Length: 152
Image (cartoon, rainbow, N blue to C red; front, side, top):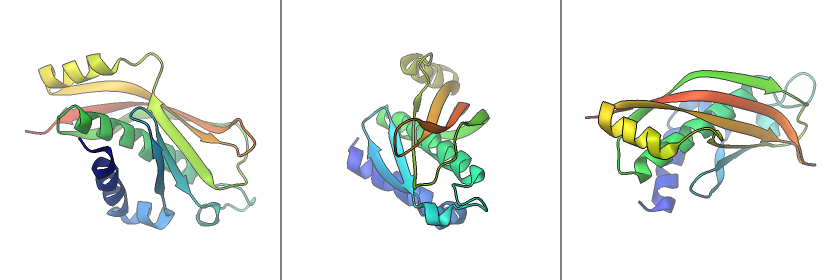
């Protein structure tokens, strides 16, 4: 898999969804395990002048979905990916552009996930995403379980 081509496909997929396109989400970085997304604060500001909580939750959901999708594609598999459940903790207001990153949770085992997806046609795993404060630290933390269902 060409990482650049996969990231371009992911970006196009994000842009094909009108609510996501309106958010002006861009892919900032991907290292094969962690995906970082960026969006300008001006499109996500709330009545307090900081980032809207729904935008933060949406971006972390998208980043986690992207990690799953890229990893599945990299393994040569095809699957639909869904968020099964999630929890969001808002730790501090974010008065800057939205920069979020997502990766597998520490307890997640990617190899086991892929083997289960191959063997059973469906698998689930846990991810963690964070929205970062510009001065360091975490504004918002998102933990979730995602499910993949193999495509024929």
